[in-house]
Length: 476
View 1 (cartoon, one colour):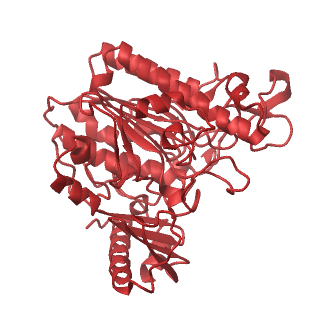
View 2: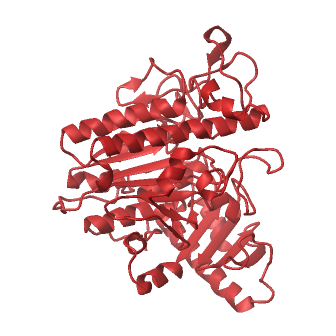
View 3: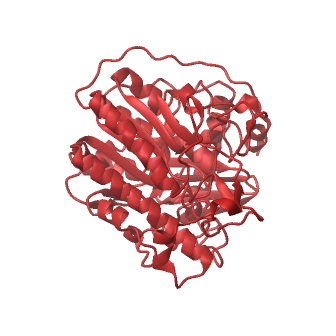
């Protein structure tokens, strides 16, 4: 219980720069790295995981040539913390991003972009940032502009050479605009004479971007990302492209082309599914670009969601089936997300794996392939190289029995292999699940397996204490 209380008390501690990086010798294997991420996309919101309503032909085609992860976890059940884990390989409680619009990515954290820079990589971020504010004047989004200057932390402060980013959410169509009436969770595209500013903006290193912000938001993001990749290829540089879509985060708005296939459904479902299909088309556009430019074989193309679906399951269109829980929950439906890796030169035939993986694995995995160690500090991710290379059973057994820790608000969870400890109300309520037989988390084994419960609880509390040490600049 003590760690739960101390963690909450330390969220406002100051940050100090503690890391430096020296020159590294380039390894012959320098794959391009692309991190695609949807926003609030449920595990079952894609065809390759069994959805027969929402149309995701491009993702399904990608899955037919990729390594699909059936147990891939977002590091948190909400967006900002997960995003931090993608770039740092560390759980966000180690540096104070405990929820959406809380904290910012401190400069003491080594990001994937910073790690890759000495290898000659060009790095760009495109889409939703949500790891700090992007502006110091006026008003922007949830925290940016003339308030919360302590959270000013754009991508350029974390190793990115270029960016085209928003602080937080925007509508998925005409992203800078909303209807003149009350804001809703969805709406039909609005004529220019009947709309008003949404209250946020896209930013780059030169400031606010004023022109060309109409139409499908996923297409706007992808256009900028493709231009960046093309420039990197011309300059003969490997690249890191972090492409974080807003779809299907609320408010969901789909253009007619994308909503029409769902015309028989209610408006909320029509726009939700439509913006997913629009995003899917942009992923197809990216894959075609990589193939046409001769880049696909040597590009690690990752895809996942940042957490489970928004809303109540009986009303909202997003699906986490067959799992319990949704966004904001550490039950499986809140953190198990659709995910895959396409990398033709390494993954020569489609496979699915039930080995557990998490968004914190990106940095350790890339570092393993480049052959350069990470700084000596606690990492919550592991290299997925054994499963990518389809290595021997010993390596697979090691990954299968790995532990992954989670904390969000008053919830905590610790997974070791297929066993999962879940605690709520700051540890006063506890469950134990065996995911190999009970992925729906319907049977609490806490009373029948007290020894396992005690072991996992103890490991969770030790990990929580380690996160607290990191938060206080005392990594161990």
